[in-house]
Amino acid sequence: MIERLARYIAGAPKKGLPAPVLEKTKHHVLDTIAAMVSGSRLLPGRKAIAYAKTLGGVKEATVIGSRTVTSAQNAALANGMLGHADETDDSHAPSLSHPGCAVVPADCTAAEKGATACEHWRLWLRPTFAPAVSTRRRANGPRPGTEHNSWDGWIS
Image (cartoon, rainbow, N blue to C red):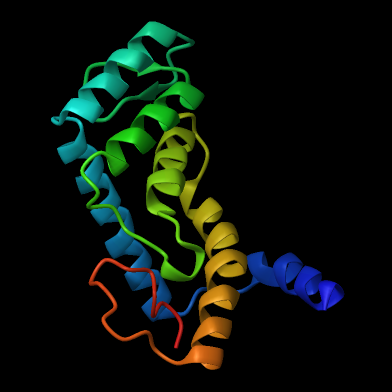
């Protein structure tokens, strides 16, 4: 099983993403960016921005919704806090997590530093979500009452 999973992950960069997965990814990225922008106006978001300002750091990346430019690490942390500030960020029910507010801020800051976020998405998405969601869906079928912003249903 481990060898099969390792081969799958190692081969992921050579495979393209299915069109429906790529389209859903675009929606989740935009949804997360919108959550970061709206979160920057809320009390938790304003506190995240204020905290990032106190950290200082090399000016590498922007804290969304502010004029703060700080290290990529600090910006990713603050932007993740912004994305989750009003609880409108996406969710992944099988893992009980909110992957968008962790992954999208990291990719935004990596892109500001010059990395290609698209490559990161392709490498991250295929081994992380495709097998997990596909396996769960085959085992359990579609989850009734799935919220519109859930990652459930990426792979059928």
